[in-house]
Length: 530
Image (cartoon, rainbow, N blue to C red; front, side, top):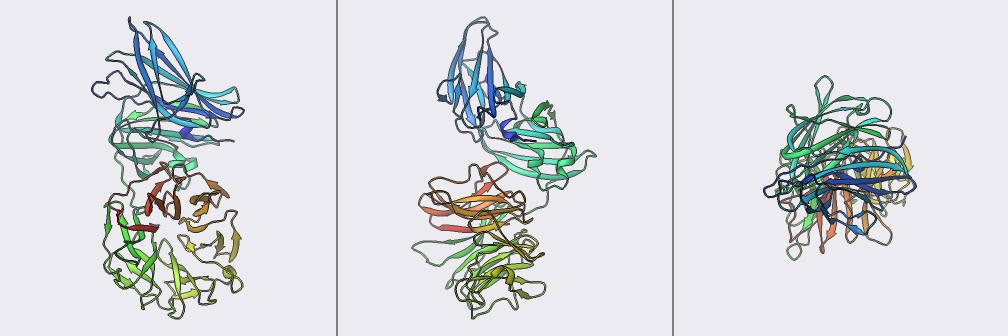
């Protein structure tokens, strides 16, 4: 049974009463466009003037990120704003359509302090046949809310939309509770000014075992007021689920996934030697690592554990080609039997728990590189003969899953240590990074005649996963690293004439600000995220 992205279906009302705009109406998230002969969306806006005099005003459309959204109004050209005027008692409808599927929201602003009535009908069609529809009305903002959900039965799911009607970012916390009131999980994200998020519950918490067969409630809290809506789905049919004001306390999950980013940097004109640094998203600052910094050496290729405690990196100092640093104890950890001073080793990838280190080496063949695996528990090396093949076969740039079972090398060749089998994935790429559970692989590849872009491959489903809002057509995006929970992607991007580290949130589909990381005078790249 086909599923439609919840961001294209959920309708959400924003009712905001700023001073001077007391009569402004905020209508549901609109969705327009699609395949004229297949699935497509139409939103119809209704305005009614119940007063005894003429009322005029304007309607403005915005995309989910707060930027203007252009749609076709009654078959006319594409616009993000249109004027309207209603005589006393008059009602008018406006049909919103588009080309490709596009979603956003609308606000209707009457002139002066005059009131206007507004509503909308959101329709899902297959060709010209109506599949499902829902009408939406204003909903006041809340700072806490509860939504009942269930995903019991085939094709059943609950979609949730949360909107930020403010001109400032809004920090949102969501708690997942089962039907007995036990908290199962929680998550945090930031909605930009006038932004919104619409997802199925199963998409909000994809890593929870049994999430597709659960029922319970969602508790939602914001640093500022927000508006929310829920829709219960059975296949393509959907109905509205009431939002309840207020929410129970939420205990934040103890996880460091996506918190720490290790990266390489150098400052042109001051030093030609690359160094390793560590950024803490929670503290919003770069953590000084003077113990790592060798003023006469070069460090790079950092790889960090899921808890952010251990960093493996490449160095040219005489103590070894690959070093392991304990951030908490501010000390290096011995790696007996790993480094061979006679051969250059590089490109380490450490497992989420810190036990395994996969790395590139020329110790078997001077050129090109092979991949080896070091087990810190046994202090033993695995030469991975099934993966490396005959001497001279290029591998290099390994990435290892959280438990050390899966290793992916250059050109996206997957090695399963449990079965000792090699699989060539149907997507080519470089500089790959695998999620802790071994399901997702993020990598860089050329897109047509453009420079490098970042792509995400679902190994389980054997398909690419869209990353809307990540790649910039004018930028060179490369060196991606995926967080241990698969939510965040850190990557190097050349935008504005120099390299810097950016962070993409798959949940919101937006780039995440990293205050305190970017140094305008430095080149930064090759990130590794916890």
